[in-house]
Length: 423
Image 1 (cartoon, rainbow, N blue to C red):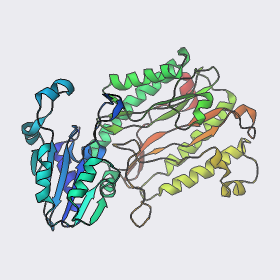
Image 2 (cartoon, rainbow, N blue to C red):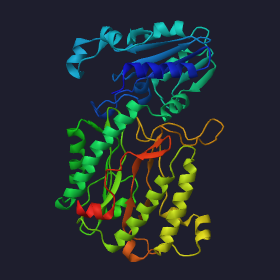
Image 3 (cartoon, rainbow, N blue to C red):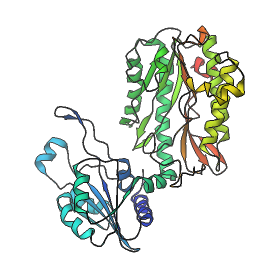
Image 4 (cartoon, helix red, strand yellow):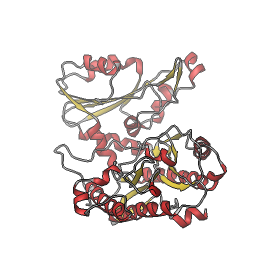
């Protein structure tokens, strides 16, 4: 787990990145309504959690910076026996003061009073522009004498780009659980009748191993369903001689995994499926081998498009001259998404890809990203040889950039055709 010493280091680093005479306010996530008077399970805002490790709602972090010196405060929900009867125990002020190393800790009902003194002589207000609710409006109203407002996400996104050893360890744990789930899916798929049955088996493995939430809604897409990129209905039959695209990852102690495998319902690939699958796999392996410090993500994207375009041409899915097809991006019809994304506290981590001058960041040791080429051919696409229609394939792994190259953190989740068929 992440130590309180590491959380303190993160807060100090964040505070030092702020301009002099600033105040930064981070709000905890709110409970989200599911229907009428029921709510979704609570999950803390990722930035809030990154700086504190504090999991409760109705809490606030405030950084108050003078010229160079700064103080960082935490506001927590006060103890309330009646409320706790319904929604569970709260840490409360005294236990929070013993457990968390802030300049000071107050109860939430003191926030408005303390804010008045915090904002005195401040020139800059940092907060998350994407939060659009009454809490933010009240803060902005209280801070109306501060003219410069700065979105907090850039600083924290930059800070979250490079993962610590503790973060990498938690990511590896999430991936190990996800490995067990995907391998179980490969073993039992032919015994099941519906996509949702397979989904339930996968998510049972997650929860059995302490990953109490999914990193995202699982995709279990059989046959042509795989050609809907964000298919989450998972209610169709598992039909013989079709592939199942399984995009499923768990979240362990707030850290994500993101894995996709494409497997045959019957345990054996058809010849056409093998041809298309091996082409996508070869592309993925080639792109992963390119990863090292200094490489640009756009270079990985461009190379993946070049290789997929060649592959589609060799299989007769595209027709024409390679350079012309590539220039016209004919392959994008079948490969419409990017080669991958940052991963961490969020499955699509919010870290930027470019600096404020729009210059792309090269890869650095400690970054974690997915590599996920895919090909999607709709069953009604008459421009494609019939044998390939209705096939959707994506293969996705989670890659850590190291000092001398990369480490495929999910390399133990099998993906070779022979391995999948054997399992």
